[in-house]
Image 1 (spheres, one colour):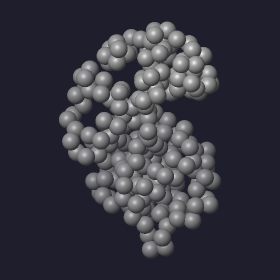
Image 2: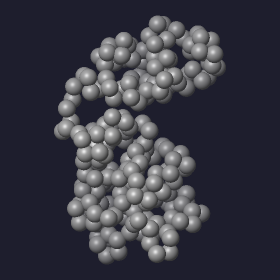
Image 3: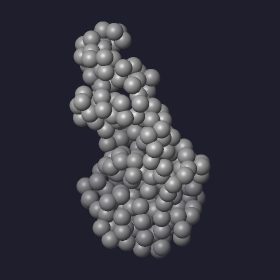
Image 4: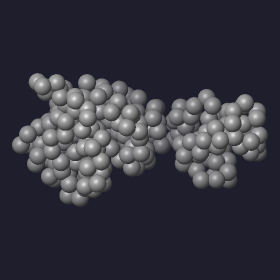
Length: 226
């Protein structure tokens, strides 16, 4: 929802002033977006919303007084038309699930690019949903469409989620890594550079939340990826 001037009015809620200043600087040249207020904690954010409801709330998860999840839950109950984007440094499934259950319209990691940040804001302001690409598409799809069961933690569900978040190339990389090939050998086989192979390996291990080959092998067996 946009106001009559065609701008989306934004409230920033984050307990770090530097983060708020950075977002304001990033948005200052966007004609359709305007930051109308700031809050340093959850309680302050709700007080501001009650006085002058914005179009979009960008909120951090970990804040004093009330955390971001509690704020989103309260907002969706009392101000259902207010859009909410959770901007966080945490990419754990637990946080994502809680935010979606609370009614968040989007979830984006603080390390995202400016382009993705603006894309998320505009999509949510236009009535859509936006979740960072690092979030399991299975989990997001289930919760957004209202088809989820309450956190059934089974190996088959984990396997589906893991396979869903891996790209076709990352699946190829995984197979070659587990065959014992190094980055140069992987690059030669897939006809890509060694640096590109390294980047794919890094992204793969980050998505599967492992730090070394031993953990990767164990995780792959646990999820029946091998």
